[in-house]
Image (cartoon, rainbow, N blue to C red; front, top):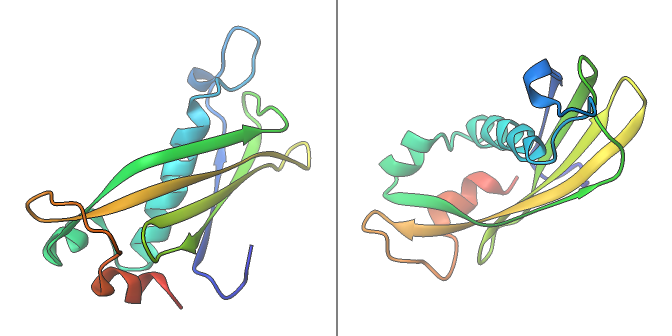
Length: 136
C-alpha cells in the first residue's frame, strides 16, 4: 500500500449471520466487507453513486478477486483497508482484510471497475473527471 494513494480503513465486528456451520465467515461475505470499504473510499473522494451519475458516468464491477489467508469468526473484529491502485484504463481498488482479534491478515483482494457513459457505452479510458478525484 502506498501512502500517497487515496486510502480508507473501516472496522467491523463479524455478525453471527455471516458465519457457516463451522463458525467461520463464509467466503462470499469477504466481498461484502470489501464493498463496504470501497463505498467508503469512493464516498471520501466525492464519488458516491449519484455524484458519478451527475458527472455523466457509470461504474461497473468487471472483475473481483480475493485470496484468503486466515479465517474470520463470529464476534471477531476486522479491519478492511481499501485503496486506489490504478485509474488509467480501468479503476482498480485493492483491499486488505485484517483480523484484529487474532492479529493476522485474513485476506487480500481487488476489484476492477469499468467506466461507461450515461448511455452505457464502454469507455476505454477512465474519464478525466473521475481520474482527477481518484488520484492525489
